[in-house]
Image 1 (cartoon, rainbow, N blue to C red):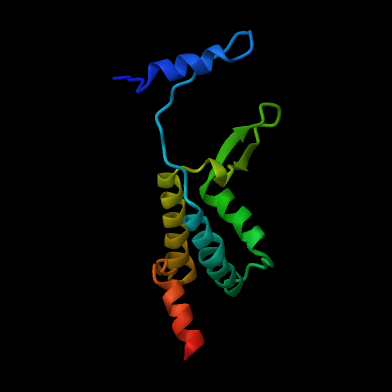
Image 2 (cartoon, rainbow, N blue to C red; image 1 turned 60 degrees about the vertical axis):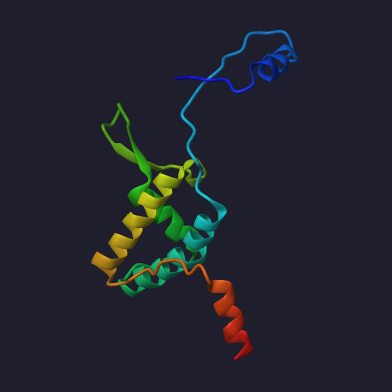
Length: 138
């Protein structure tokens, strides 16, 4: 069921729009992947994957290259070139990831790392700041 919590505010906002034609789109709300999820991805997962891939014979030099590799492998769409019949893989933007997409993406990376690279990518440590302080004070 569709419900507008405060119809008068919405109508007032719509009345303030300049004259013209508009389209209203209603979509199911999905929570976007969080900043912390991306920090874990770029700060822990990709660096570990970079080392493991290079140990397996790849020649990646940056986390950005690993990001592109991973997006091509697990977060891409396939487009057909009708002239040649060639299938192109186009990586999608992670900015568009909702939380569940991000979780699935990370699960694919971790599974690949475990099965093909013999690397265990550890879960994020919720107490990393405390551990960092403990190490620095040691």
